[in-house]
Image (cartoon, rainbow, N blue to C red; front, side, top):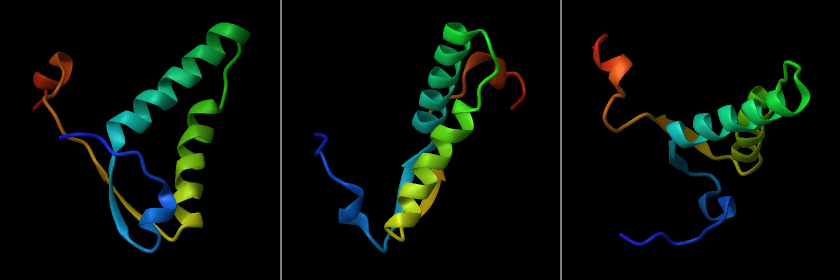
Amino acid sequence: GAVTPCTLREFEGKTLAVDASSILHKACLRCATELVATGQVTDSFDNYVWQWLDAFDAFAIKPVFVLDGAPYDPKREVI
């Protein structure tokens, strides 16, 4: 399937499945980028995740975070 651009407003008041891996990956990338740039611990990971939570809240969207896909190698040993 094709991806169709949309806005959160289109899902106002609904329950929405959210790719948690994507949000967490982007939050980690932002945090690492700031850490390398400044050399200091940053709260950008938390801020990025809260920005999404606040956006869902602003449109009364109930997010259901989904972690899917094949486990990566270190996790495979645990499960």
